[in-house]
Length: 224
Ligand code: ATP
Image (cartoon, rainbow, N blue to C red):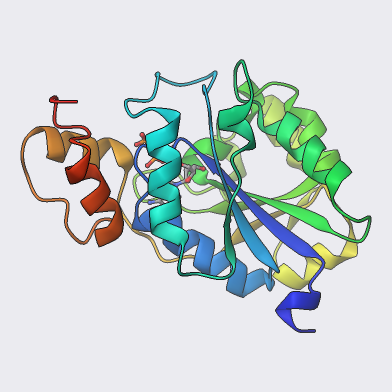
């Protein structure tokens, strides 16, 4: 099956404050491993569970655009920054499902640090009726494959959902969990912001197009 015929679309939500090679590399590798038709990058407007982003939704969206514009499989989706009120992934996934033809299945991608907090998300159990969940390991965060470290309610909800191969995702239209093999990159937006604020280099942690945008707009330097 060619990728354009694939029934799977990936969704990578995030604050992207700013987007970096950690995001881009997991997106690339998950597209390849699962054979996704495309990966949608969905910048959060006002994340409910986190700090208030430093850069505005407009800047964060523009940086995602600058980072992905040359990859035909990567698509920017601005629905959460356009929505009034907090960003809920479940709400976006519901919308995607309604908009897409019935034979399209969704793969929601998250790092291991985000997955372990899933039970704190708005209507989190509904997620499993809308999409598969794809987890990427992250340096410094416990492996999602060690189920003992998961909070009890998450562990119980997920117990029958784990699959060990990408091809097993085709057995159902949603509700399965797969830990994708991805290159571990110890890059975080927090570190990037701290380095810029300390006037240290962030080159090679994120695309030059994003770095140019940050410099042009004086983001994260304390001058904005
Ligand atoms: P911050 O440091 O501000 O918390 P972040 O680097 O974690 O930001 P987010 O935009 O919050 O970036 O991340 C979006 C998604 O990408 C989350 O699911 C997160 O776990 C995942 N992710 C981010 N960086 C990596 C990385 N280096 N490796 C694997 N997953 C990552």
